[in-house]
Image (cartoon, rainbow, N blue to C red; front, side, top):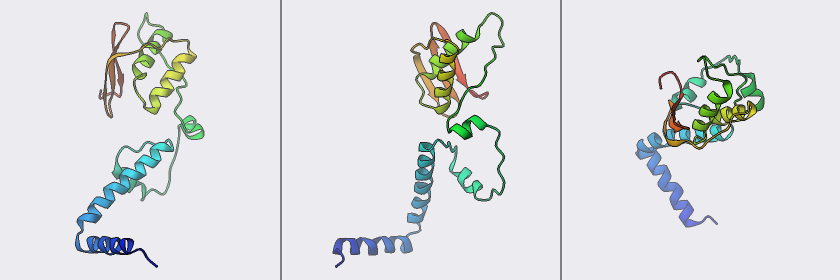
Amino acid sequence: AVDPAVFALKFAMSVLVIACPCSLGLATPTAVMVGTGVAAKLGMLIKRGQALETASSINCVAFDKTGTLTKGQPKVDTCQVLKDGWDLSKVMSLVASAEKSSDHPLAKAIQKYAEGVGSTIHAPKDAQTKAGFGISCTVSGYRVHVGNLKF
């Protein structure tokens, strides 16, 4: 026997889907949100829901970031200091300290590289993250900004 409450709920949902297109309008963003969340847990970062829609028309993909693909996590291979008088250990100490307050996968890769070159990672002060751009904070008296070129 079917539970009457489940039976009634199925009919109610059917009526909503047929009579109210808004329910489909809510279902699509919910599905995109769940899909990007599951992808993030698997190490895939999807910037926008439209990227998923665009991906449906892709018929060829070329990759050049082998460390990210083969190990499933980002990795910093090299870093070059462009300012005279600054050594790699000091620069990486500032950058990795700024990234200490972030849970972004690239932040973890930067911290691991900094530890590998002998940098000391300090606690950042007044860290502020601007989603999609970067992070700014104070480390050892220096104002540090780490992010993309638009930041």
